[in-house]
Image: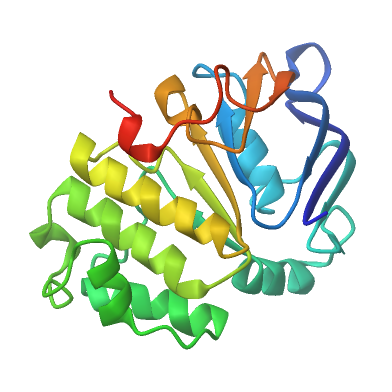
Amino acid sequence: MLIELKDVIKRYGEGSLAVTALADIQLLIDHGEFVVVLGPSGSGKTTLLNVVGALDSASDGAVRVNSVDITAASRRELFGFRAHTVSFIFQSFNLFPGLTAAENVQFGVDASGSDADPADVLDSVGLGGKGDRFPHELSGGEQQRVAIARALATRNPILLCDEPTGELDFRTGVQILELLQEQARSGRAVLVVTHNREISRMADRVVELSSGRIVSDGPPRGGRAAVTDLNW
């Protein structure tokens, strides 16, 4: 399995003030799977994503990603892991304000060592011709597409997406979801965290969280839908 979580617990704080964000998480995800992690605000979705991507560490349990035990990895090993194994699409974009759109994408290329062409990747997310624009010259939706392009350009085997359509209009959101689905079909594991149940209809699997626990894990209710059949 590409991603393996066993008995994972994540706590914040100590003693009587401790808050359990994740409890007894058991999760296996393989190459080529499109998985939607669904749940309301505060259910532990983003924490789960951060633990898989080594932006946060588990308080207990085992986390293996791409054959790397990230619970026992050194800081240097984790640096290489983040550069070459996982790519994040953040809800808050996290673009470099002093770099153009193309330069932001080039940063992902350089960090991962991929051979992607930033212009081609920007064109694939509908931003052809806007590579010379700085983030402040782009709309929120356009900035989100630059962030997505930067993640796609790494060609890392795992894409971790935190509300990737949150700032996009419906038409552009469908385009991005189609791109992410294509990435899964090419062999990448794609995890999309969202509170939007409609998006879960297109997934291979839907993992539902409630109060830090997985309450269901399986195919979408009613069967899998095409991206073009979604509506929100």
